[in-house]
Figure 1: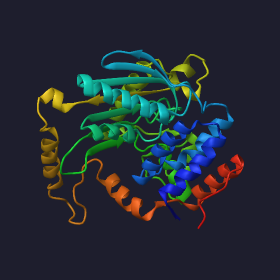
Figure 2: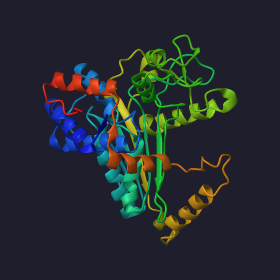
Figure 3: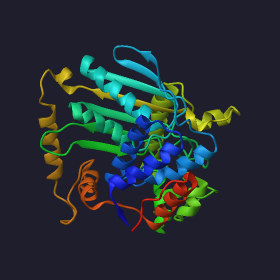
Amino acid sequence: MKVSSEVLREQLGLIFRVWGMPAEFIEMTSRVMIDTDLHGIDSHGIGMLSVYNNWRKRGRIVFDAPITVVTDLHSLSLIDGGGGLGHPVGIQGMKIAITKAQETGLGMVSVRQSNHFGAAGYYARMALEHDLIGVAMTGTPGSAVVPTFGKKNMLGTNPIAFAAPTRRNPPFVLDMATSTIPIGKLAVAKRLGLPVKEGWALDEDGNPTTDPVVAREARKLTPLGGTRDLGSHKGYGLAAMVDILSSTLSGAGILCVTRDKGEEFNIGRVGHFFLALNPATIRGDDGFPDELDDLIDVLHATPPVKKDQPVLVAGDPEWEAFKIRSKNGIPVSRELAQEIKLVAEEADVEYLLKN
């Protein structure tokens, strides 16, 4: 079915209120989740609701967690998320980074004691409204990526997002997992009854699998590149870099480290990294967006191999999805609709996604 963003936002609000989330946090969390779905990133929007519900029932999320600024310097801040969902602290963290970048040219915010925060691209895109470059990275609540030459999942999918402002074209927005695919795509494939591609995931024994159910249970994705010959060592290195900036720098947790020490890893120990940069401060003029437009124009003009598949730049598919879904609604599969219905019934609130 196709569901309007307004209905999905209202459904989330009904559920989050019962879960004890403050009104301000409900607005921020719903905003990020719905915006993610509108941009076609189905793995990180409302499709995460049942996962959050499972964590809630296990006592792993503090829905009214206080957000505390621990360190506040001219260009740097450290924030503690109190073990809550990552969306509110993610928005606050990026807002602080933006304010500092407007004042000093550069703002960097490190976050600890947080949780899953949805799609990293949302936070990087926040900087665009202020003609700034935005960067967002995050650790994850669990291990899902097997290092090159290994057979055990050690790191998370550890995404990187980068957004840069333009004037003529849609902004450049790179939002990528450092694994071959984000773990959420396994859930999407399972809901649609589709296989995953060869080389994306491994089974429990470390062998390649195309079965999304087997892959999801094993939680063993390959690093970006898939194999050593195709550059998986680069994806592996990027995943480690993201954890260093998001988790080690902030004092957050990394599951494979706590596991090795025999310590319990709490889901609410996730770390994030946000950066905002003012190109005008560095250049001394406002020519950055125009020159980035020139680059994008040249890349778009690259002769394609197939006439019906033009060359794209990062962000193009998401902007196209946003235009279509804003007008026609967000597609919700039968299985996802059933998941949302079960969560709504468990919360004893009205189920709104009706044909």
